[in-house]
Image (cartoon, rainbow, N blue to C red; front, side, top):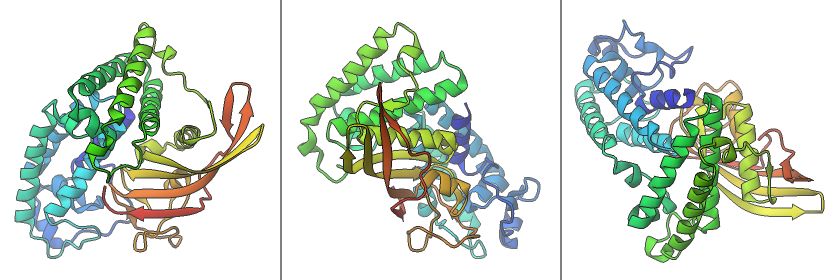
Length: 371
């Protein structure tokens, strides 16, 4: 599937050439001289320093290929795949920092040998971790994920649900399967909101234990729905275009429709939606919400991707919208983007339909570093 292949490329930032960009300044001669495959593999066309090292060094390139296999195997066993991709890109950002590679860093004074040794060590450790099935649970760093992983019954139920989703989605064509995984991801976010676990990252888990009952009910209800489908994925994944009520779930569906129309899933994952205000009449509604997204693959801060998928251009130095047109900087992986926007809905016979066709313009936007 396209999203998996792109995700694996983003997860490596080393063997993937999709991160090249025209007009990227050439690397310093010191880096060229230190990497035997630099010229052969045209590594100067890659904009990321770590990626250039993986591109031009034989040992790193070999390790990167094995990492790619491990990443792909993990994605094949995960239903909420973009969350797994997000965890991977956050690991990349952490790996780069710990190995002494920083954003917008000149390679003129880069000590290639120790940086390479660090990257190689971390890559080998990452491969071993990814091959451990228990990692799938432990890597889920959301509040709900940590509660599920910490309770054996919840962990077993969640693993069962994951298996049902994979089995049903596996019967669909590629575009239908991608839509099914996106629908499941929206259900996970909706589940967390219903269990009052959204935006609770800094709350001690001991204070959230009562939510385990809600999580259990939601997961078991979804398992029952999967079983009742009797192997027919279209009875579960319906590609709904309307929401039951004008709320966070409706905004989530609306953003998903906008992102699907602009192929935004290759670059961003919606991680959280928080309702701020709602105005509802008999036939119309206006829901104002904060939408948080995580960057999965780099894109220009002022580009069609930035405008169509986040609603604005960005100034990385201030963390605010907007940057000057023609800015050649790229939005780094693992950045969090928060936008505030009002979404219009129309009441129909079967629910509330989104009348907002695009994310721009937004009322407010902020770009934040790190997870």
